Length: 230
Ligand SMILES: C[S@@+](CC[C@H](N)C(=O)[O-])C[C@H]1O[C@@H](n2cnc3c(N)ncnc32)[C@H](O)[C@@H]1O
Image (cartoon, rainbow, N blue to C red; front, side, top):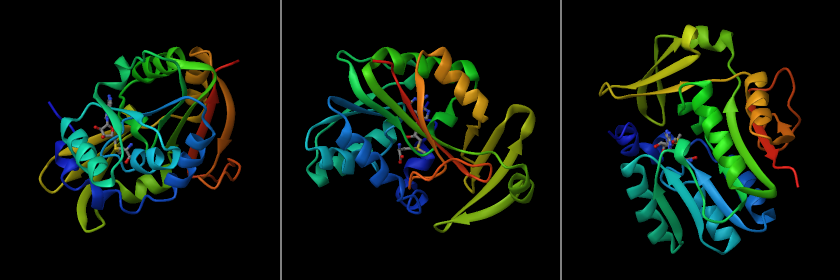
């Protein structure tokens, strides 16, 4: 079943506010000497400008056929070559070691359990070349903002959706008017650090935003850069 089908239809509008991450990932990819991979590549929102910037094909993995169909279409329109693979990122493998694996727009949070996230970290660590990097981003759970939004309908780029928090499952459900929903399972700083640790990676940087400002107690985002030891 394609759990992202309903979001694929509205994804360009849904993600239209998210622009500041693209130059950040483009810069990371420009620095990467070797294969570049985007996990949960979606419709290519980030991968297409990244592939354009590095001037060579890159690999995108996603479990949603509907999102991948859009990525294929938009890459063709942009004249960009993407190697797109329909795959659950928990099963991600590569034939040749990668210099950079990245996972934008909170997509790691679609993995329900810590063990699911661990599988991805271990797969990424196995796929990276020594000195290669894993970069991902997530929101910092804020109980005050959660209390304000819980059970409320909101509008994002004209799309009405309801937000429901399930603290016992560290989960946020986003439901569209059609009834279709996706869930995000947020993680704490120490959980992310634990994932880096068990996978044998090292935290190279933790930013509080895509402008590379330092992470502080007031930060709303985790922007992580982990490195496989050389
Ligand atoms: C918020 S979108 C991000 C898409 C794109 N990376 C971007 O930044 O615009 C989340 C994506 O994660 C994908 N996804 C969710 N769970 C996945 C999994 N277990 N394996 C691979 N992709 C997954 C969805 O299909 C969707 O395309």
